[in-house]
Image 1 (cartoon, rainbow, N blue to C red):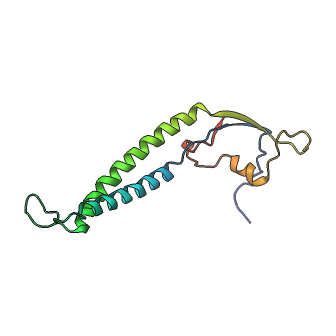
Image 2: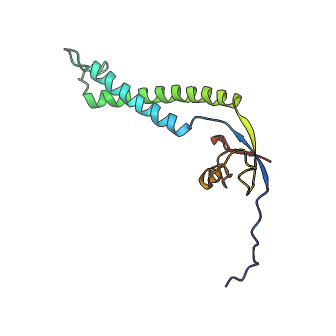
Length: 142
């Protein structure tokens, strides 16, 4: 038994407008560009250490190990690749704004009246989420 006031379920409106666009996922771009930076750093370190003479520190003259060279190259390559990936994501996201469209969804129980039939999972994917990030392309228009 609850001591608070009873809540009645709020009926969903019969018509809702949604803005749809295909936008790239930021997290996927960052992960893929980080992996590309890792590969570039590994290849660069392998090429630098493949020569007949060992690499030496220009200040102390001590030979550099593969691990220390890889560490420095990893920081530089991942930073550069992530920045390039973010630039590509920004351009793709801006391009996706030009192809956005607004659709109106109307609830109907008669399949003959429907233009398109959505299954429950598809309809749930279109429903706005609480606390959703509006940059993911699923924004609602009031």
